[in-house]
Image 1 (cartoon, one colour):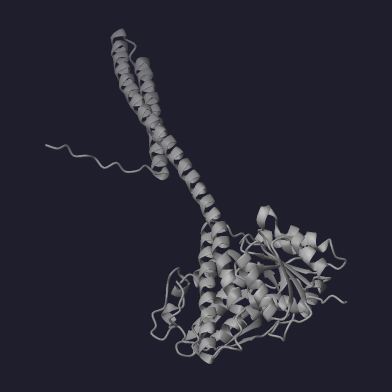
Image 2: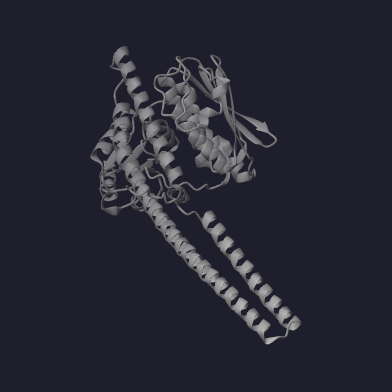
Length: 472
């Protein structure tokens, strides 16, 4: 007959610790027994002093000691086995930790490659679509163009969401908390989503506030971007309003919509990963159910309170309550100086230098800037750009450079080379798909604006409109 195999259960730390404690207790009990026997023999010898009784007592003691010695040896063998098992478990845990660290390193390398390799062609597609002359198109063609822009925006949001989830899972996001005016944050989001709302035929209103907040501005921007994009996506017609309400515990930044709404029983579940509300009237261009789960994780990371209210068929409110910061004169001045950018007229008389080692990106950017009425100097490196500027007797009003250039050159270094050749330092922008917040902080510390790929063209236009024009 086939022998039955015993199932070997894994030994956990708690089970092993319990076994060790039990062995120690048994050892202590044996010691007490031996001492009790010794005391008993000594008392018997004192009570009965005959040699024969001493002989019997000695024989009994010898047998007791032999039995206790065997028990000691058995217990020591068990203890040695338990200790060996513990060492094996600790070794397995160490190896598992090393494998997890290697997996995180691989994920970090994937994020860096995905951010650049996937966003670069997406950026070129956005530029080429924007460069199309809509004046000569039929209404039907303009509709198709708007739908193409919406599709690219959805693809960009999906890619950004997947990369954010991967960074959260790998621990690659660390909060950088500071004070900043909420107006600067809303003014960055306004131009980006005004274009998306117009393409979706939705009215978008953003009501400014001069409150000073204390949190991580970039992570808060991710939260609000998810709120606004969802509001536009799930509002077939009507409007979306972004505004702020002062509360004792902080500023409540609200995103209202007149969309399809959400039933009460789903209001908490929508913050779970991959959860989607079943609804026949919801948009067919839904995401994958990760945006609000990212919001929940960021709010937990920053200790922010999130608020959600909704009425099916009437609309929804999504909000986050952010603690106030210290209102210094510098931050109040920044708030007063930040003004929302809207679509303006042609950007004539502005000379814009573009540095990028991708021919497709250069062609797309040149086409967009030409459509906006700018004079464009496009080059693969700063030396060629300076030569073209001097040959045309031009002085740059704005310099835009990709961060990763050929030959290991970085965008900030390329901008520095161009600035050295002119008396007036032009406004400068670095384009990057690198998600590292430390890089963005370092670039901003150098006085450089940062644009994320694929480019938000409304933000780019707003920067060009604010660029001082050279005289002469």
